[in-house]
Amino acid sequence: MPDTADRQVLNSRKICDVCSEPGKPFSVLSNAWEEHLRSKVHRRHSKHTSISREEWIAQEKAKGLARKAEREALKAAEMAVKAAKEAEEARK
Image 1 (cartoon, rainbow, N blue to C red):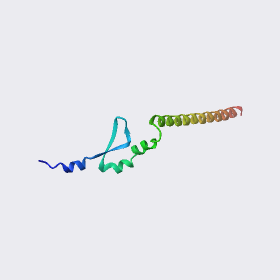
Image 2 (cartoon, helix red, strand yellow):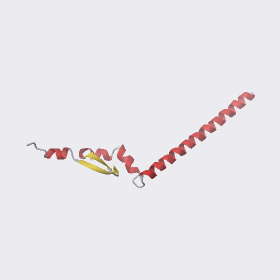
Image 3 (cartoon, one colour):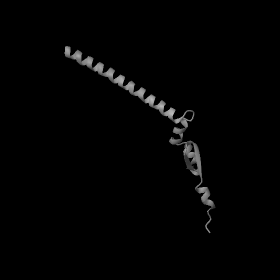
Image 4 (cartoon, rainbow, N blue to C red):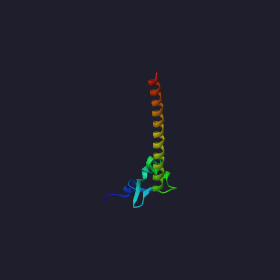
């Protein structure tokens, strides 16, 4: 009969409550637990624990739209400056 006692330690897993979603538990091997706590996935999930995931997504979307509007305003200003220079050069 094989000795399987060591396998329980080797293959044991921990469930991360921060990274888990309803109905989708996120489990990590016990020997990789410390590495998971420093991982990008865990940090990303721990950022929005104070608010719901949907609220966090809405905030990120609003930030992205604000950046897009700012870029468009800068492009419009650059185009206006360029058009003014071209008009001034055409007068000469």
